[in-house]
Image: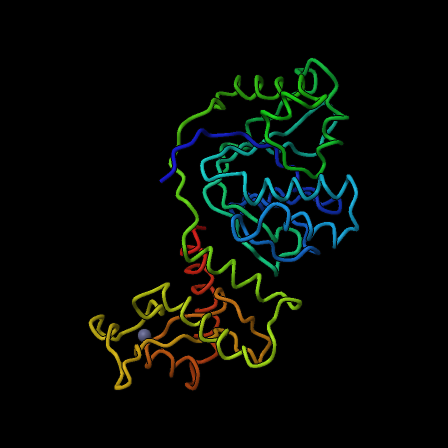
Length: 316
Ligand SMILES: [Zn+2]
């Protein structure tokens, strides 16, 4: 466990193509950023800050604006920690600024099937309906500030110290304080990223097309991935499994575990070769899932379960 001070972040990635995604964030209990076209980015230390920046330069061609994007994405993935506060300021209605405050509770989740929120953090949103602030309460005009932070992730301390909108930011903090929201630094416990999460990240990086090793390594990669998922559970991951628990540790005659690792959505049916599409099953449940009349419904049920167990193991 690492002890650290709580920090406050301004996150403005919820306005996607003029749609306010914030209601969905509340519904799903997340805050998010996207840069979907950049693809998967592994957390530090699997990916260094230079490597992270290189991916953005390759995708967008370099330059100052790219550096800003890369920095914001880096903050979201690596600098925000579980326990930190995030502030989201909504679209500016005439004279009125809806402000929401949440507590981040997870490490970053990679959700490739959700292009507008593909990098997410689980977030407990505090009473977000009661925090509206009138434009008049600010000492200066906030229109430019909101425009500048239309899609960004910034540590509030840094905005305050270095940014020309420092006065507005300190106003925002002061006004939130009058709503009874405690924004002062607190010491919270933040678990480090799990070994499972870091190994998944290494796996994801190697899975990039340009990094796939020469033919012949496929079998080894497959075995590595299965071992990674197998290490996630010491039991069948089907919650309705009826196999007695003492059998889960049993070995077969070759000394291999009887628990098996299966792709929830088969690779042949466009399933992803990723740990969040894989599940640990005992031989009975594996047979039910792969060749019984219940196959279809089991696959749908296990899809959710595999994703949840993966995120739990990864610290999400
Ligand atoms: Zn089972």
